[in-house]
Amino acid sequence: MRTFECDYTEGVHPKILSALTETNMEQMSGYGFDPYTARAAEKIKAACNAPDATVTFLVGGTQTNMIAIDLLLAPFEGVIAPKTGHINVHEAGAIEFTGHKVLALAEHDGVLDVDALEAYLKTFYADATHEHMVRPGLVYLTHPTEYGTLYTKAQMRRVRALCDAYGMKLYVDGARLGYALGCPENDLSLSDLAVLCDAFSIGGTKLGLLCGEAVVFSREAPKMLLSQIKRHGGLLARGAVRCVLYRRAVRIDRQRGDSPCKAHPVDPARKGLPACVGVSDESAVHPALRCGSGTAENVRRL
Figure 1 (cartoon, helix red, strand yellow):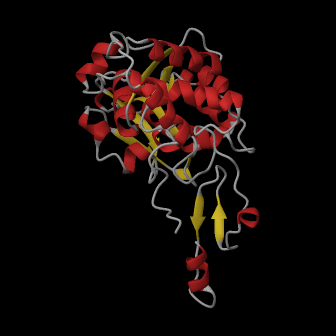
Figure 2 (cartoon, helix red, strand yellow):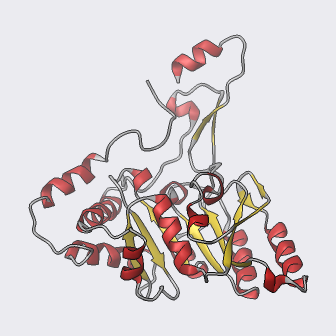
Figure 3 (cartoon, helix red, strand yellow):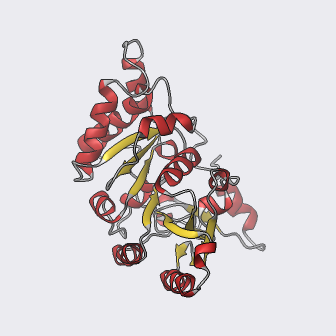
């Protein structure tokens, strides 16, 4: 039976599991002071064409968003997000827990309405009392979105221009970034994200790794980054574990093209799925079943 519950119902990609087994008895320093962490960071910087970036590693998506956004914002600032954004609807108030308000704006199929963003910023700063309000300090986007849709390079550039005009940062949640990178319709590369974003994540948890989220601070990294991660409860003692995963994932991708961190387009006709199944831009499968003749057969085939 196929399950559409989520994209991490299974354990780990077999080649990633093999990498863990191969390195299991190596003795290494903890907290990220190991050769695998250094190599994984260098490989990610090379893939992003961002040699001066700072790369750090965390464990899960919500933890990553909470820590990255908190470190990028001043205490009196909030974060703009689409109404459907993960931090606004599915992270149990993690951002608010750090003292930052989520400022939710209109979206279309998960993609932030950039006109609404521009109108909001103009209205905010036109208000003579705006210094008594939560200042928008960062724009949060997900690529792909929660609906499986993609931002274009033109849209991302426009958001970046507004961030520059209003003194804000741009953060992209890439928990499922591998899906977007493997989609033919996607025109945003890792290099583009490194240029356009202040920071972005490259997820592993949902893409075949056991756990792990890499965060790329492509502009200025937060001061005392390791200490700040520790203070937020995000510092993993066995830090090498995450980076063995990332290093092997990058190696698989370069050698064979079958990396757990790259998605491949799904054509329902080729995969033998019923025609009632819709496939979004980044290959997430969204069943849309209507009651009536053949419904039971469609469900059985799924």
